[in-house]
Length: 357
Image (cartoon, rainbow, N blue to C red; front, side, top):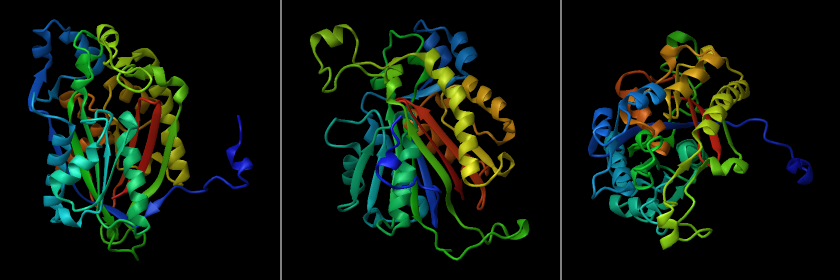
């Protein structure tokens, strides 16, 4: 393998940390149609297989008039209301999605217009189920360097638009919705670590460590073959149903179970921290069997793992921010907590972010 660092006569970064930022608020919005396993059972799906193999009991599907930008806008509005920040004060919008409203314009631009964020920079990021972690790390750089004052980071999907109803092994897994967070600079820039008694009052907030990675050689494991420049939409592609997502579930399962413990250990080592230092672990909500196998492998305390995919299914880029919203509502994330997020999915891509709240 070519050593790009040697070629460029530079050294790889010794530390991936972005301190002095904070998540000021969060919000979520889900598809209007709640679909329980029993509802899918009436349509011919095996409801027992769904719960046994995935742990999913229900998922939210978009209504006929709902698209990805609708969920993104609704979640962002809730986020801004919680933070008491006017849309005009938002200067950066990053939307993580693999199901944009259109190939052009970007979903982020639609969100910018709907919210009334003046001329805020707006961009989509497509890293599939890792998308929110990618977007969070990217936006954090803007806030840290002072290039952004208020950055909206949104994970939003309408996965039912690319799911084949005839694919009984894949269609039941996915749901629609969005989660958003508002990134700002941490006002307590002089904060330092204190003892446990003063933890809530004195600590540095931000990304303690992160890792983003990809392996395009396995791109076919999760792919929508048609409707891009490689295979434009045609009568033949529609006949072959290539406008829908194709997934090699076995390959993805084995890869995720192997990769998650590796990226957890690398992220913690990079921050010079141990597993016991993690207050809450938020994995991408793909499959309970993947999460349980990975957690058993790494030795994570199950009580520290946040899971809500039983109610929402796999919402790709929306799964981690939706989990953040619910974890905050349940009091499972507090000021000063160390929250470890791990995303993994199509590309193949994976990413981790150890965030001190």
